[in-house]
Image 1 (cartoon, rainbow, N blue to C red):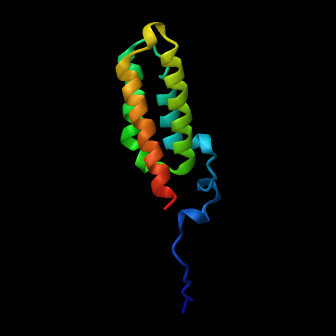
Image 2 (cartoon, rainbow, N blue to C red; image 1 turned 45 degrees about the vertical axis):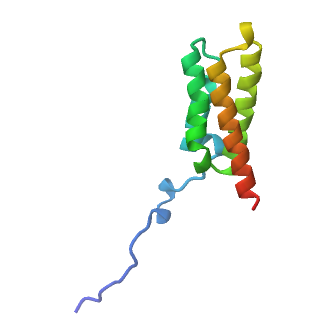
Image 3 (cartoon, rainbow, N blue to C red; image 1 turned 90 degrees about the horizontal axis):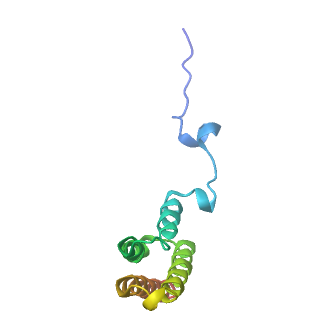
Length: 112
């Protein structure tokens, strides 16, 4: 009679080719944040204002390092916008400011 061999089910961790450590910049959410951040200087105001809208919509889903990145991006955007002729687009400033306020709310929630 043949001896039966028992083995535990394989998990993805068993396969070395599937295990890898993602760097901060390789994470999908960081890729999305980087794409949004690249649009802060677009020549079309409606594109720029969607940066703030996007960050505001997802800010509570981010971890601390991503929120820090978003805040830095928004601060740069607000500075760039203020230096535009006429002080920049008011809607861009509004949405960037709203997202920044949401981020500060995140920081308050995280510290409690």
